[in-house]
Image (cartoon, rainbow, N blue to C red; front, side):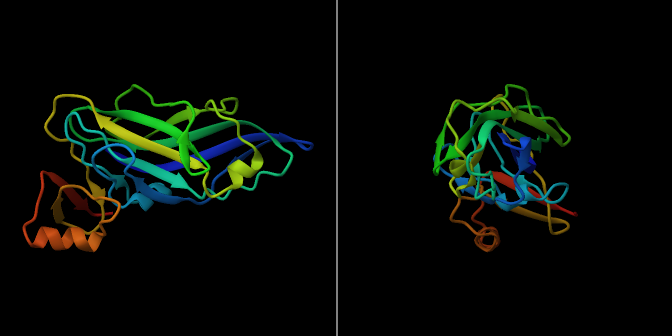
Length: 212
């Protein structure tokens, strides 16, 4: 499973009319509150058409949440928030088995509201999937101070729903290098993963690092 970029938009209305604000930044991390394995280099979800964040999801498994908060919104006080929309550009290699498992909002630091996960398989080539909309509140009440707070954001988890042994998940990075691991956890750094690989402490997952 690969995620290229995630964008969040908030539609709101004030005395000047209707507006749509898009996040220009985010703090991206793995959230182990769900799933079995993390996303490799999660901060890559901030850079469109560059390196991707990837997760090697075995058959029947679910990824951790990819969590984006600290979105930097500045919705004016007194405005009425009309809806929240998100766009996730994602793809998956190999037999088409990767699907959304959960796509939800984060408010006040906790995952809440309606789940907007889509049932379609992720495509082989990067394509953006839209969630929510300018008139969709995801089942939560959201005031400007909630949206502007660091604890507001979105989480995305993927699943491998078919009986397939592994799903390839390449990421662009160092050329012609292969790193085998059990998949990153929030506590693991790239350096620790490389150290494990050199010592032969490999798991079943493989991340192939390709030329940018």
